Image: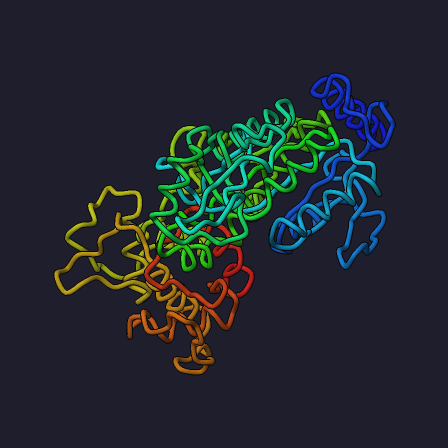
Length: 461
């Protein structure tokens, strides 16, 4: 059956690329169609990692210092490669994919900075065209951009393949929901943009929705060779004055989200989309999502359910009452051992029994005003404290102060009451930082809670 799907997938991909191209552009004197494997490029290892893990790799080969992985990904023949950061390395790897591996199309995946006003962190942008925003002339009066880097020198826009990009857009909507997916111009340059004023310039000059450092180079080489190309990016930041910090916290999740969209594309191209009979009942959780296994686990174990109807709402903020209820369910929904109450916890609230149980176990505590604030979004340090106290209620050997000190660039932002709890969570790998940043005051979403619950149930419950 796997061989049959592979053959069908190859046929569908060849048909898609042939139809989208019409008669392909001549390549070194050749004019036949190119039904080869699909090339998938990223700039960084973290952007490619999940795809390599999911693929069935049959061959690894090093060319010019880059590892090219040949195999299949969800039924589609692929060649995967991490190119490196910047336009030169991206163009070089694209050239290698076309000349050495005879790819029939190229998908560029990864993260970017949001430029459009309506484009938020963790949204997806699928390129309808790309532009090199740093191409031009530096004069005494300043920089003068021109479009000579593109085939269309008047607009400077580098085209992408309509059919392949449409597949990317459809897959992104399936993974994230249509409200978080945008189509528009992606601006490329050899700079990390962290400037509100330059973001405004990208908006005004190019009507750009996102900015990054490689996409236009990939698209330009593909355009030169007549190879279909799609560029899709998940936003790790807003390219503003705090972009470095926002990027550092979000780049792993954003990379995995973009990879999830690519895997959904492969399901579509191979004809296997929606073929799994035991899929979760949530329309907003796809098998290709990085959090799919965690959501399946917490759903199967009756720890978390639908947010409403048939939605899990993976990106919705988690609350204090929600986490308390999940831990209570993890313990088998026991009777409360005390009559501790809070003025803002109604007796008929879904979390009422859980709150009474947790308060009796000293897992949670309210404020000096007698309130628990159950509907308040939970911060990462509040979550750490609750998880730490829960672990202590299960294992008395978990003692305060017995774990390594925190060593993050924002350690000073940790509240005193939460320090020991975060030391334990960091040591156990339950709550980790990203690129040296812990973000103790940041909030957690439901997908992250699901993943953390799986870790703690394996380590503690």
